Image (tube, rainbow, N blue to C red):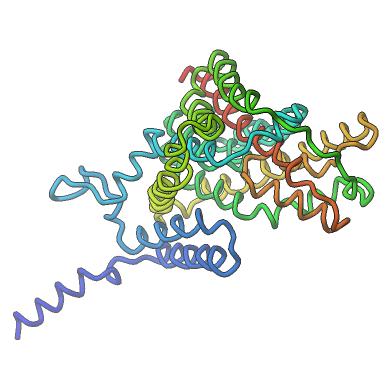
Amino acid sequence: MSYIAETLSNLLHQTAFANLTVGNFVMILVACGFLYLAIHHGFEPLLLVPIAFGMLLVNIYPDIIASPEETSNGVGGLLYYFYSLDEWSILPSLIFMGVGAMTDFGPLIANPVSFLLGAAAQIGIFTAYLLAILLGFNDEAAAAVSIIGGADGPTSIFLAGKLGQSSLMGPIAVAAYSYMSLVPIIQPPIMKLFTTKKERAIKMENLRPVSKLERILFPIIVTIIVCLVLPTTAPLVGMLMLGNLFRESGVVRQLTETASNAMMYIVVILLGTSVGASTSAEAFLNWTTIKIVILGLVAFIIGTAGGVLLGKLLCFITGGKINPLIGSAGVSAVPMAARVSQKVGAEEDPTNFLLMHAMGPNVAGVIGTAVAAGVFMAIFGV
């Protein structure tokens, strides 16, 4: 009988129930909430499903992300090796290659003023940086947190790794991807607050056709200029432009298809699950995380408002030729932010078509957020 009792006791202590804390139960509920939003409401399921599932796994079985030093056999958990690829900036850079292969830069080339709208939306990042310092973060941590304002998950992970803020990478990444997913909820009230009904109903002229030569030269020129000024942006901007060159050159169809499909989805699985697995209850349920989430939201709101307000100014300067709504797409959530601009404009006039106009600032925002990350790395000598 003692043998049976001892065996049953060992089995009981091997179950997750023996080690779960209240915090773990809270994080499991959060994970289930994310899964509900992703599956039932369709909020960026490509991102939220793997992130939420990684969150679920680590709070049931913490050893899935344990380092080799923390295990008895010297072999780390499965997601530890995935997470190492985040820290080494490999997965964020590959994501950028995939985004470049999937994205049409034509609207940005046809309307270069979009660069200004993309730049204006980065004001949220630098505002959040100052606020983070006031809240007690050191300079590097404040910079890593502030990038959330660009609503760009890969750049947030990239900068946190480069600035040595691995302990904050989980909360930063989850906040960034959450706000990317919630763009359709967060942005419309801000857009409507700063625009009038008349401005939202403005119809913009069709964009001019962009030649193939322009499309091929654009990624090459942007890479040369940006990487000469800020060499530290080469992993992000370089991969973004390489992916786009695959797309526009027309001579490497297999590489384009691989970068924009198979490779992109594989990387999203690895990055999403590993990011989710960095959110154990011990690492996530604390005041630092709460401050990060709040700062990210403030940065995102200010960035959206900055783009819309510059859009209003350009609308005035051009005599009503620019719809201010496209300025909200200056954040990096591609193409969700551009779709929201289209949706809000169509609510005022169903015949209004702003999507392609909004894609210009949206793509500019991706480049702008990468440049902002490069500025921080240059400031801190990374």
